[in-house]
Length: 107
Image (cartoon, rainbow, N blue to C red; front, side, top):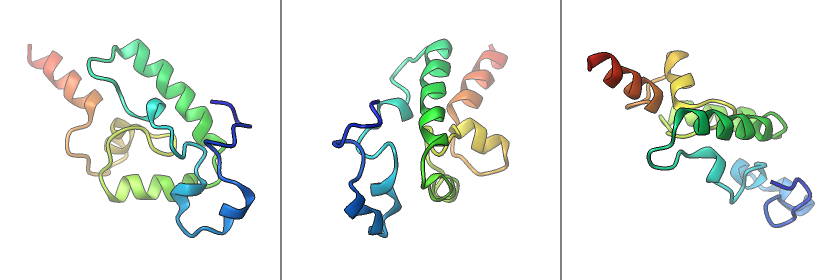
């Protein structure tokens, strides 16, 4: 994603907006943050690496992380996948990575 693209990044006027999501680097762009159906592990790792770089440079990283942890969110939020949140002790209904490994171990 182009960091200079004004369509995906808020203007200076929006910096006073109390809704942290409007100030996020990813505002309006969810492709990197949610897995496609039947996404392969290597593709997921590449996608999440790109998302992580975007999250690391985001001014609302803490708000995003806290929201995802508190709301049991799926997808990649603030540099964490649902599996990361699960492993850190936050409740996630069915983290994708854990679910996949559990299925493999049961076979």
